[in-house]
Length: 310
Ligand SMILES: [Zn+2]
Image (cartoon, rainbow, N blue to C red; front, side):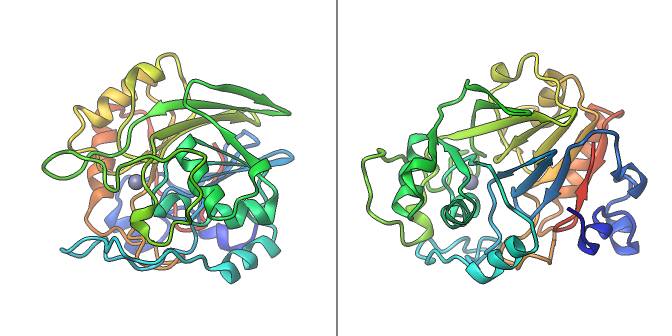
């Protein structure tokens, strides 16, 4: 479905955005020939709309304040909250009605809203044992959970999901994973604060259907050997990756230089949905890296709820 909200979907039509993001995909590129539409909900939240089916990746609309972009960093004792009214409002308007929800990792900015969305939609949720343990403890109906470890190649009616072993962003002097850890599926104590949502392994997802394919990473890292032979039309690529050797060129090379590279996980998620703001210039760094490594790829930057069709 379409609404007025998605009409301003692509940055580049507004003067401010254009001046900040010279060289981004012009609005005319928003309508390709496939029957796949990609809508961005901020952070790494993506809605993949195919004929007859909707798939969500890391849907997180609540976006509570944590202090992530302050010098002190995120407060690990920040309580987990879900803005049900916000989510209900979009569901009532026909958005987010997913058959599948794909979880890349356990952190709060990826997983917090998934249990509620799963309950509301009846979607099957894919994640690692740790992700499923966290989501079950947060009230996700257990008969909707599907465990994955990476390597699964799954075919459904009209679309396919390939689950890939992947890696989380490496940050700080030690190039470490924030809130690391795992937990068994049998553990059911309820996560209360953001530090309780441990990473629990990281997966990436390739989704094909409607005559197009899209590959998403929820963190700024990857396992190169997992990606050999993949040729996605669209790569959803997080900003960052400074600690990862040749983060952008190595990835674009192994993927055969995808036609579209859309930025993800670039906005300050302490700000509410509807306020897409780049806190530290990561978008421009990514744009330049993509242009240098793969000049023929179109770099796409969407506004919140913006969409495009490859
Ligand atoms: Zn994370």
